[in-house]
Length: 252
Image (cartoon, rainbow, N blue to C red; front, side, top):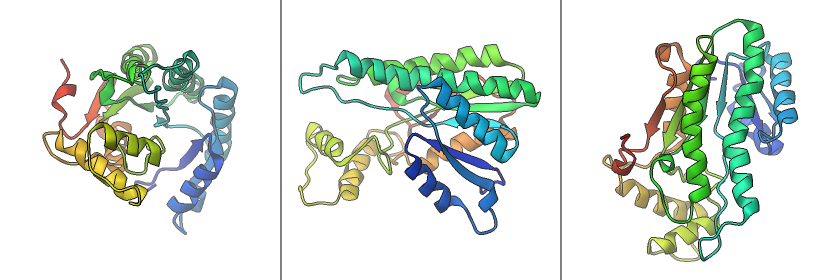
């Protein structure tokens, strides 16, 4: 919106999407932002959201997906079969369905278009207890490569691979933050606010990077906007790290 774009905010949580649209809409740009419901694991829902976008905004120049899910295993590290399936349905198949449905619209428009998907540093850094999530993000990396080949030259497909983003993330409710603090033996008090606990965890993650800086939603947005812009017109099929310099995630 700051760069003059027209934006449809789509989310399974319509209330959250509406609040984001209201927050982002300046008095002189209310017609430039809208919201709708989408369940990226359901092709019919994806199709309906894209059609609503076309009707509301006149077409689709780009699709950005930041939706994903992390389901924690039990105390022994075991993940139920249903959790494994749901993780891959949303994190992998959801991205495929979204691009597949958007592609038909982009072809009918006959205009250059862009897609940016969200992977993760976890795609190349295996960890105990997050096998399903890590595997799903590895698949997203390769999906970017495959789609870039298949949809060229009309559509550019790229991705970003952030390190853990704690700030403002619904993937880090209070209980998961506390569990992570305990896991890494970071001192805290139960009466501290959730945001303060999140800050402690974010600082811990930042110390593991070369820049010693936390990765924020704004950092991810800057990378996404660059990849979606004409400045990146010669870039497709790549996944851009946004991880503060995480040595373990260096591409090999």
